[in-house]
Image 1: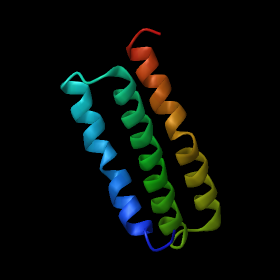
Image 2: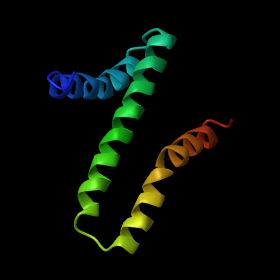
Image 3: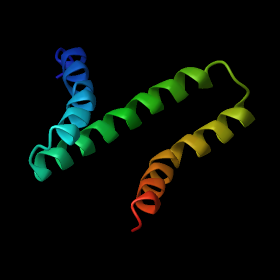
Image 4: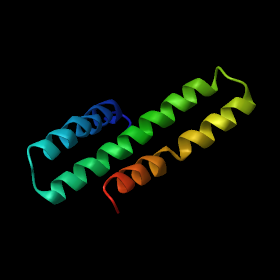
Length: 87
């Protein structure tokens, strides 16, 4: 499975633009949900990788603050979208 890891990452990152396209082209709702969910997971993975790279350069106290704030980013995004849509 490690042989296909770079290809898999590239394919999974392709779900981000597909998710946006599916919204504007009014694709099937289940397909939109699946692509958006996959895109959210990919963005979370990307944020985790970026946090790990920053962690090698910053003070451990600041790293804890950074990890705590980025760990809740998905909740913040989902909550903001829900409020904007009136739910």
